[in-house]
Image (cartoon, rainbow, N blue to C red; front, side, top):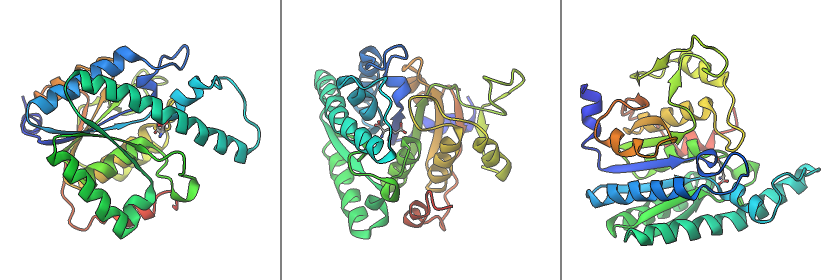
Length: 289
Ligand code: GLU
């Protein structure tokens, strides 16, 4: 085991992000309860080891669309589509939490819901309050379950994707590890779906300009909003804030305990605390470039 992986065994405050495509069945868009149940079992087990856990979960819009049978309906005007998306999120977020609450209760854990927008970080008072709420929840042994507040977040105040949101949460709570569970194994030198010569990258010690540029060329999955670009953005936020970050495949949720045991799973981005990194300023600048 190399020294970087060895260090992961001692991580104490862990943020785990899972995306919509990992939580739903491809064929129907319906929730994958087996996947959710395994996720909750893994997270509960991490809590039982005395570590603190925060879950950042997508799936609100997907679950809502499904509940109101809008899976295949085309929405015409942009305003209408936003309102439909927000209405679906309102239905779906409640459903999502209902399922998480039930599953966490089965493992004797208490879960809480936190919904955020860009303003939660940019506004000083909001950020202060959010920070205090997270701290208290963790002190109480509760597992915060976080999503973007999709029912109110429009372009001006949205973070826009949960990869970025999870890194922002990791920075806000001073987590020491962020794990992004995704439908890919980790970072490759190119898109492995289109280039058979793409090589897997096990560890990134420095986020170079070249690497960031490479991410911009890739596209996201059909369900969630994140592609490699948002994952590299997340890596930038996390590593600057002194958290290691791992991207791993959610195909087997058991990858979580293997990562925490120091096993060589996924791509590890090594933390580099940057005293000049200003989280509110960075978040304020999102989408404005
Ligand atoms: N917040 C959105 C949802 O829960 C998803 C955002 C994302 O997948 O990145 O549906």
